Amino acid sequence: MIRPLDIPAFADGPRIPGGGFLSVPGTRAGVAAADVKGNGGTRNDVAVLVAPGVAGAVTTRSTAAAASCLWTRARVPGPVEAVVVNAGNANAATGPQGVADNAAMAAAAADTLGCPADAVLVCSTGVIGVPLPMDRLLPGVRAAAAGLTASDEMLARTILTTDLMPKQAAASRGGITVGGVAKGSGMIHPGMATMLCFLATDAKVDSVALQQLVGSIADRTFNQISVDGDMSTSDTFIVQATGRGQEAAPGSPAWADLEAALLAVAGDLAMAIARDGEGATCLITCTVDGGPDDAVARRAARAVAGSSLVKAAVHGRDANWGRVVGALGQAGLPALDALDVDFAGTPVLRAGRPVPFDEDAVSRALRAPDVSIACRVPGPGRGRAWGCDLSAEYVRINADYRS
Image 1 (tube, helix red, strand yellow):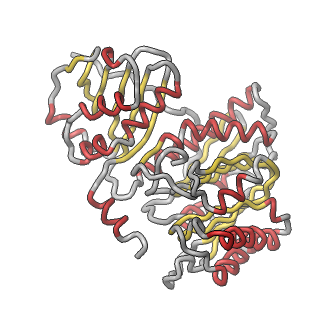
Image 2: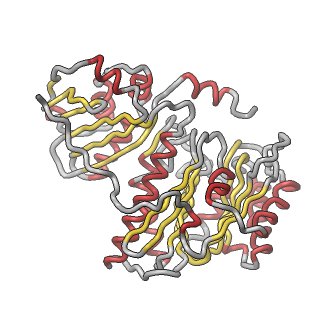
Image 3: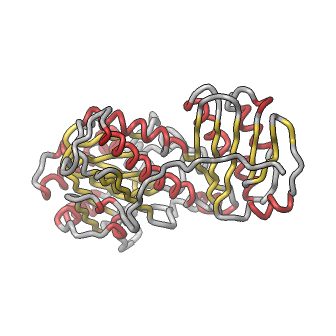
């Protein structure tokens, strides 16, 4: 009997059950309803996350980046008091007025919190090309900033757009705590995968070092998820460090603890985004063990998780593992003549040659809420990526997105 490939866990470490952004001491959040979409909605759609200290952040690589992304890029790394977020409108492709409206959001939050506007980062997510409704939005921003009593659950639900589920996580490692909240369901693709993610930690860190670490964490988590192959104009990943806890400097044991805790929380949230992909019925995890380095392995894993053919095969419960090989080849992964593949936990290829397997059993395995695809070639690289299946429901959701 051929043994399945041994796949190590992505990130071990103690999670905080039910935890989120507010698991970190010194953090607070407020939410409010501003009817951002202008459809008479009464759900909360504005949030303010307070975690005074320093911050690092990465934003979308799209050249159509929203005004909020440009504002945030200009202010990190550096001192940050809070982040203000609106859901329902991306404030992208809105010209100079969008830039002015973004600054007004930061100023409104800052005036209420009693801090400089430059210490407030901004995130907007939703429909592209529609001006922000400032007459409704600014009162909502002020209300959220004035009432910092929201729970993690309230915060997580406020920032959602087409998401079906709130996304929050927290972990601790070596006396360092990290908590976070995220949103994202569609328009998800590496660089960065429409997602927003906000993490806080009590670690005391230098902002420049934190900025470098944030980029590394993003490359291993949020840049490894794909729902539909479309990059957002608004993607932002922010980490705020309050400095209330243990000092962490690069190369120290505390720094390793901080990195592990950040990786655990960001990884959990990245998987939650992929699992909640628009129209999805399952999470797809692809691991590539081998290749010349981690960057090559990560690129190959992304190619599989993001392949429309692989995603359609999984949705159709079709044991067509040849689509995995095709995606790896397109990504340029070398040594495929020595490739091993497990499809939905079943060995289907060893040393580049097909092996007998029970197609009906694999088809049944593809009905599970979590589907694994494991690939191995010679070499020290290692990469992991997450996606979801592709369904007719995805088309329906996006055909009606603006309504």
